[in-house]
Each structure stands twice: as C-alpha cells, then as structure tokens.
Image 1: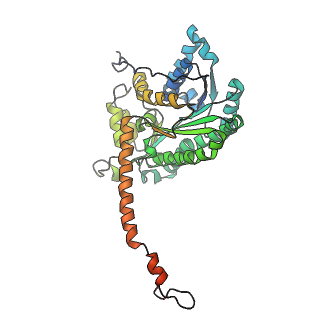
Image 2: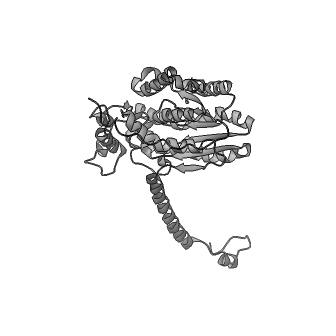
Image 3: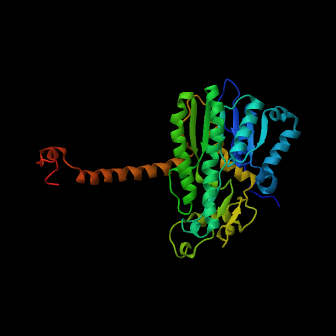
Length: 367
C-alpha cells in the first residue's frame, strides 16, 4: 500500500545564485536529510563536495543510512551523473575525534586542492528536564555526550580547517544551529545550552578570523529541522514532570505527540519510545517526502549564502522563526527598560558624593 505522503508534490527547486567559479564544500554530516539534499543540489549546480559520514551510522544503522546509500547508488549507475562522481568525495568523519577531523580535511584538500566552505550540520538531541538528566551516571553521560557532539565536535572540525583557510586568505564557515540559540525550551535544556555555547564560540571566532578574510555565518532554521532529522535520545521521565502533574509544555510530550500524528512515520507508536523508563534513542522515521519538505528552505538558505562575498553573520530561516526571535528580543528590551528604571533608583549622585565631608584619613564620614 503506497503512502499518500510520498505522493505529495515536493517543494520547488530554488534558484541558485550564479558564481564565477565552482565552490568547494566540506559537509560534516552528508548522510543527514539536510546533507543529502544539499549535496545533490550542489553537485547539480557544478560545485565540488567532500561529504563527511559518521561511520557508525553508515555501517550499523540501516534506516539512517538508507537514503544516502540510495543517493550514492543513483550517481554511481546513471550515466548523466558521471560528472557528479568526479566532484564528490565521501570521507569517514566523527567530529568528536580530532584525528578524524584532521584526516578528513587533509583528504579534501588533497582531492580538490582547497576548501571554500565548511558546513557544520551534525547534531544530536537529548530530551529531558534538568532533574531527569541528573538521575544517574548514565543520564549524566548524556549531558557530556550532548556537548561532545553539538559543541566540541564543530570546534574540532573548525580548528582542523582554519589553517587551510588562513593559508589561502579565504574561507567561509557556516554553522547550522536552530532558533533554540535564542530561545530556551523546557525539556531541552542541555540541547539549548549546547546551541548557545557554539553560537557564542562562532560569534567570537568571527572577529578573530576576519583579518584573514575568513567569514562565519550562523544559520538558524526552526528547531524541528535539527530535532527531526537527527538522533533523539530520551532520559527516563520523572513522575513529577508528567503531564497530569506538571503544566509546563515539555518537549518530550510535544515530540511524542508530533511523531505519533505525523503522516509518513513507519510506526504509529514511535512517540511512545520517548516515554520509556530507560534511556532510549531513535531516528525519527520520516518518509522521504517529508524530509525533503522539512529541509528545503534551509538548504536553499545555506546554498545561497555559502561562499558569498558578504554573507550574513546570522540568518534565521523562515517567517515563524523570525517572529519567535522578535518576540524574545521584545521581552529582553522590556526587561532592560525595567532594569534601567530600577538601577537609576540606586545610583549615587556624583555631585553629592563630591560634597560629602571627609575625615583626615580620607574616609567618608557619612558612609
């Protein structure tokens, strides 16, 4: 029985910007839905791509690697894709291992002579409240793993690529995060923390490398783009945070309901896996059509700004994301106004301070 979701009309292909010469990309997670779609369109556009693939996902997780293997088979058998094969290099890459980062970058440079754009798009999501992630040594390890993947991983590959960029006095680092880099989300505390951390790192890095003509851009799609296209790991829920006990809109409950209702999922009870009493991981089983629709706008944005002479430092993808961030900034602005008002009430008037009598020792006798 065919799934009606797969028959949906896919998003129109975006119009790519023209370039004087092909660009050379390095994609850190090319077997993700974003990575596959971006790689396909870049090759069609005439660019070169070094595609990083996490070995454990490629070898041991058939559901995760099926789409990428299908893509490789397609360009390996179709005659009209012959030039694609010459412009694609697949490398093993676990960004958490510095040695693999250095090796992958060296292989990319040896193959294509340079790297123009480094696109960091690997991510994992740990679901759980602060207390739920503090229950045991196993859940505390999840916190460590979250930062190893979402923060130290991108840091490793960036450090490996910087000498290449500096030597050529040219380069562009594009970091895929989410609007969670602006917004705290209940039940995703560690994921949000890792996003804020890597964004602060990139903001600082941008100033350091600007003299070398190296540009840094942060791309922030809706949270669902990263959450629903990468591995989700859930900590065991605590009864105190159950829906009937706690009114907070926790991400676990939202994701569980979304996965169960979303058309195209392979199992009607996928969301229940996030409610189990032990640590559990899953890759959201979305259909190919849903994946394409989910990432289309983000892929368009990344391809448009990658290697641009004057790219944005931060790009929020989509109207919904922009609206959410505006609301957050509006709240911050209002809080700052309240802060100024409170601060003024305790400020010391300098004029009065200078007229206060002083003792011979210089101590303010009214203090």
